[in-house]
Image (cartoon, rainbow, N blue to C red; front, side, top):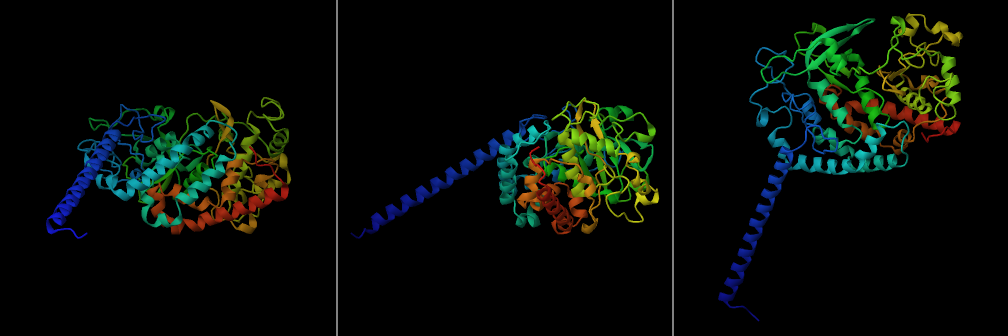
Length: 489
């Protein structure tokens, strides 16, 4: 039946009223959501272990470095305090809106960035507990590592890296603990308060890091006190940037044995010119709990260990077949050596298990050749392991330092001596290598370090190095299959 003109007008008006009501309701819902989000962010805890939005990564009494957990804020254009702080210092007053060291208001509320972050955070919340457990245990958990790699490969495909890498937040990556994020922020943004030379390490400078207080004066403190409280770091050579990649590889594989590291440029007046010339340098956190020998000639070890002794303790399987306090053991759990061997093989770090270059053909320019160390390979009893370190509070676990390795080491000259005697490798790390996801995971992880990312040419520049690691991983997996090595640590 045809409607009259009056009836048509009434129907039309009713549709308009309904439409306007829906618009009003949608607007109200959006405002309520944003208000709730703003309130939630304003009440986020400072150091909560279970907070998904934790942002204060320094003690609560020090509020001058605004600690956004976005790694994009690790390298902002930091402004100096009023002529009293070093040029690396942040501006303590007027830090509102865009001036806050961290994400700008526009970026924080950008719909695309928010959606990406929420998707990351939602996924990481499910996986964070699993990874946090591994930070405090010797053995791996097993199958869940495979689920993790598959999910993250599907969630973050290569197509994202060209446009939104800078939107990655540290808390959205489950392989970083809250402590990792805190230390990475300290390394990337802390002001240089003091410095000291490390005896026997002319290319390394130790610095104390901190911030400006509310009165714009430097936080006072003796260098040794700063280091004792975990506020020191080592500035290394620019050519050692690979050590930063090694830190990310360690976390992605779930090994969790290396020390936090970032790439950074310095402007401090306290530093020599070569450290402030504009080139990025790796900065590695100084762990005050590491146990060093009192011997000045052997202080880079927690205990002396020769190659034959090392092979004997591998056969003894300390902590699994014999007690770790047995004479053949050094107190380190057997599973630790599998982690170290896998890590060193992928990076081709020889200056730990094979300082004398006995397992490959060294280049004439290598230190082991220049110092005539390789001539000692004929007598294994004289071959000492170096950089074998543990913490005083946790002597059963190793700590990996000096991980720069050999990013350009020839694939036909790999050092298989690094995995000699190893009968078990960590299952989670092996599952990552088998998954085919190493490139995606590493790129996503490396993208949080803006300085490193830009200096290496982003994803395009880093893929060649990551491909080298992938190829070494395939060789290692083939070795495991051929030797039937266990992967159930």
